[in-house]
Amino acid sequence: MLWGAIALRTQTRGQKWINPITLFGFGVCCFYVIPSIYWFLRPWPYPFPAYQDGLGLVMLGSFILGAPFAFASLLLRGSPPPQPRRFKPTLNIYGWLLLLPLFAGIGWRLYLVSLGWQGRLGRDNPTLLGSEDLAYLVGNLPYYLPLCYFALFAFGNRKQRRWGIAFWILDGLVRLYVLHRYEILVFVFHSIVFGVMIGWKPTQKQWAMIGVFAVLLVAVLPAANLIASGVVDSSERSYLTPGEVTNVFGQTMTSLMNGRFETSYGFESGPFAILDNFMLRLFDARSASAVMINVPSTIPYFHGETFRQALYALIPRYIWADKPDLTDINRVTAIVMPLDEGLNPTGTVAELYMNEGFLGVFLGGIACVLLCLWAEKGLRKSETSLAPAFLCVYPFLAELFLAANDSMTQRLAEGGHCILIIVILNWYFRVAIRRPRQVAGRGVAA
Image 1 (tube, rainbow, N blue to C red):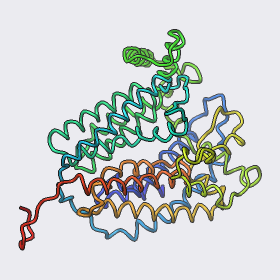
Image 2 (image 1 turned 30 degrees about the vertical axis):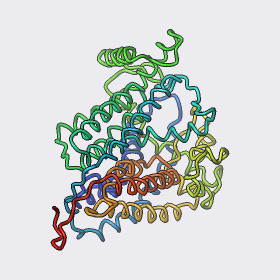
Image 3 (image 1 turned 90 degrees about the vertical axis):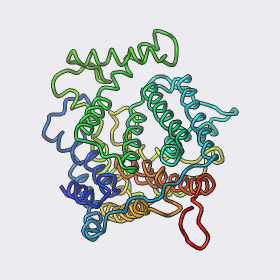
Image 4 (image 1 turned 180 degrees about the vertical axis):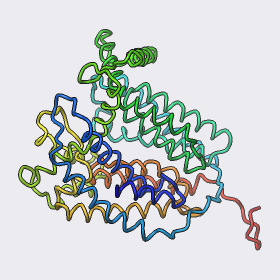
């Protein structure tokens, strides 16, 4: 209830739901609170353990994490809403340089598809100039690709805006072609956040359509991946053609309309099947519960050691090949969840707890609210040189505020990447944005 109140309270401050504190609250509710309540009320239907014994610790940790946010939301009650953005810069000829990373990013995605990076098909590690580490570095390009067509759309002339829209559509189609649930959801989320920032106000009908799409995508796409695997196995290829992807979606929807859909656990049917699968995908309190109840008996206190990775996250793996992986933090879940395949997310609450207990959770909450206030300050600026760069990058920051299932270290590391990109974009916009000329002695635009 605390996080729900925080999320509802802070969205009245002029920025609605894209406010950083609101997004942070939504994230805790979506990944911890709501799924936990759902599985408390509904019998667990899956053949692996629910690991619910530690949910009390997770809920208490979520409450303690929210205490600094509740205090901040009360202090900020009288804060005025942000003023409308008054600058209308236009990209000059250097704006066309944004097409280079756009073409390169789309090309890299298609190259990965040829290696099997499509859905859950077999994957060969990509190489660039004979180096997997260099390919890993370049592989970040497609993720940040949207900020280029965001810039073209927001600040470009008529032709540049058309190119921006074309690449937005192309990027969406390629992500559907890739059949990767996270990629599609992130594309939709980034697009909605950017749209709201430039003035789009979704209607209730549009929100309902987005919600239905998200539920179907999260719960049903695994069935499409299993069907896709069968197509690839029979064709002896590592990827699907666009026509085959269309057929896979058609088979998936036909199965769904017949009242049953295929998941990693076999065929499921019944009115609660899709909702169960959806809530299972969001139930990251399950892994947090398994971790927290085993601290310090099985998992010792780390005393801040896990956060060290955020300090060198900006060093490319191409330079430091043996750099620890941020996902190593999630390996503790394999120790306490031996019946699960692969790794489960540790999440922010559990990582803070396994460092310094509930004290670590409280201190982490203070750090998180300070970062949210910094981002909100950036949102409220309207006429600074950083405004265009922040506008393009904020959808990626918004994702980090929402992602309560990411560890604190992951959020800090990715936040560092975003800040670096803001600095680089600021340098670029100083050259690429055509500023209005001033009439000598009058201080008005010519």
